[in-house]
Amino acid sequence: MAENGFLKQAPGFATRAIHVGQEPERWNSYCVVPPLVTSTTFKQEAPAKHRGFEYGRSGNPTRNVLEECLASLEEAKYSLCFSSGLGATTCISSLLSRGDHIICGDDVYGGTNRLFRNVVARMGVELSFIDLQDATNLTQVIKPNTKMVWIETPTNPLLKIFDIAAISKILKEYPDTIFVVDNTFLTPYFQRPLELGADIVMYSLTKYMNGHSDVIMGAAMTSRDDLHERLRFLQNAMGIVPAPFDCYQVNRSLKTLAIRMQQHQKSSLLIAKWLESQSMVDKVIHPGLSSHPQHDLAKKQCYGHSGMLAFFIKGGAAQSSEFLKSLKVFTLAESLGGYESLAELPSVMTHASVPEKQRMELGITDSLVRLSVGLEDVQDLIEDLLQALDAASKVSETKKN
Ligand SMILES: *Cc1c(COP(=O)(O)O)cnc(C)c1O
Image 1 (cartoon, rainbow, N blue to C red):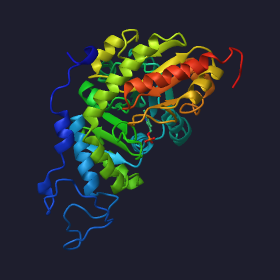
Image 2 (image 1 turned 135 degrees about the vertical axis):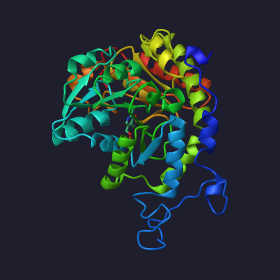
Image 3 (image 1 turned 120 degrees about the horizontal axis):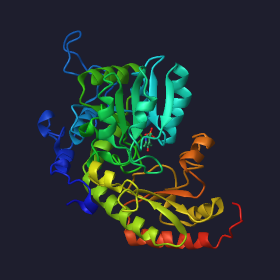
Image 4 (image 1 turned 30 degrees about the vertical axis):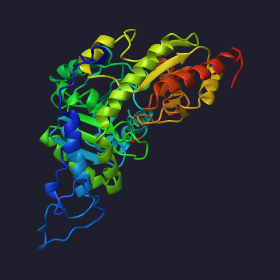
């Protein structure tokens, strides 16, 4: 059995990450490491007769290498890369037209919420946010003009789990509705939504996939020919493409994805269990804990869990602020999924753009702390958390930050 009872990963993932799309034979030099091609234009042998590349926006050899590798990790037919995760979201939401309706999970990345509410809705697309912990909630909101269902699972930052297969089963009755899963928190190493019935998987590659906090990039994978053709057209027509150097970096990072995710999983679970025993901690949220309300669903749907966890600190803004300021190994910063451990307060940082009423309904309070557990020695991380919790415990209950 896999760690902590999750689905067992079939062999082959790490091998594909290292070799697919990286064949030396495809280059004249037989180079083992795919080259960084920066040329924006490509010589044609005769007008409109070329060797697959014309202009860098519509195709680049370094980007192709990455896209092929990503498709194989997702076990998808196709993959496309974008200049950011939100660039991928912009492209995918451009599949919709005025008068269409999109149903979005209620607890998504703050920037996704902002894009849908302030940009996509302004283009005349109707928008509903719903809690899909019970997949049948969908049947109450879905309408004839619902053309897209968009979810994140586990959600951000509360790590609720939505049942991808159950949602997809309901959507079988609505063949015109495109089902998109933002899989940024788990990567294809721990969850593959296409095999559970999703039409498109979307990533912020900025996070675990690149994993070194030095590239902003996004991706969309699908096995549907029609969707791929439309997305590929939009990627070029809208010009939301990544730089070749960034593609080179992400391609390189994928070589260690499996081994990084294994360590993120080990360390985050250890820390989650340790936090559960601390008197300054009210509640720990981690899908690998048996206390997680959807622990069984997580085990049925995922191959494991990443370094993401959240917890409620005892007290309020004063305590969480003192805790975060006291951390020395964890860095107080937005983002996640890098080799370095990060901590943040979603209510005023990553999720500040979510309207307050929606934040309160979700439970994103000033005592909710989100951690992205990195690859440092776990004992150093625990000692750091311990001293910061201790500092927070000395703040008087009433003190405001
Ligand atoms: C960061 C993030 C995004 C947006 O990606 P960018 O690369 O920052 O544009 C989307 N979804 C999730 C879950 C994220 O964490």
